[in-house]
Length: 436
Image (cartoon, rainbow, N blue to C red):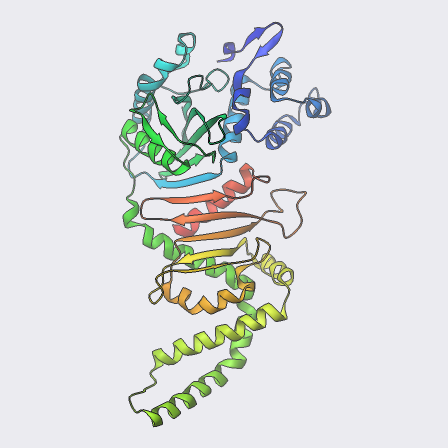
């Protein structure tokens, strides 16, 4: 594919700068420098001083520091991990190479041969391709596929549509699909640009959000490759329960030790008080009885109130976060939404991402109801990110909002400044492990 790059007035004609709005330029610079640090002829200072992506692409390719295929792959990964919305699916089928190539052929014949210039059709092979350097969405509201590739481990697919966004500016809606051939785990990465459009070369499918574009792509991939996904309706309850356990585990890193110490002191006193009060109420009305279930429920509510006062008044958030991080805490909840048995809907949120939910009084007023519910359908987690961004402070965090619905599982990355492959992969792998 090296011969795709052409010289234009002594400059490299590399068109991937058209994807500038999708590229994280800070991370692109870091990735290129890391890939080329062993090449003595590559001058980092010169590269850093180049002011545009076009100049950087030209410097890399004209100096033969990186092959075209390698640069295209660097950009694909950059765009993928710069997307703010991630959706989880899992494919049930065995993923054979013949099926993959048939799927590529279906997509190519339906879309690519019709909107990609004839000069580049020779690269549209069923074994796969990455021609980000050539294929840009030149027609408004048409879907393009600049990347269809696979190896022994993964299948990678990129689609992109150029559209007029809500600000009246031409923007790109992109989706990068990564399918793990070994276990069927499938991740859809979609950028978060706002705006509505109809896909002109796909039955005018209406796209109104990242979620609707994901659903469109999920159906397209399923039909093109004859893949079947595990039905969310049969897994969402279990996923909510497992993420509740995960959040509870992270919360225990923060306050578990203090909770246990306080409970040892207060539990006997609280139980005696409950028994005494119920005895008095029984003397007033013999219909009032105290059973173990009622006693435990009341004790839990009373203890939660005392624990809330003990934590919020007795400790600094930094003190407990530092201790929790050393124990293995990777994140903490800052907002939760749940459906309780007694409450139709319960919600609690922290004042900011720096404050764990366990430092808010409202958390303790709902704590018993949360435990009874035993599942979470929407929540926000703050992930410690110092190990992914060396310039960050020790307790700095990046937030994600996770939604577990009957028809989709999504992770939304809320940090628009600090976002890279290592952080995103860590979050994905941690959440995948939690729900497996």
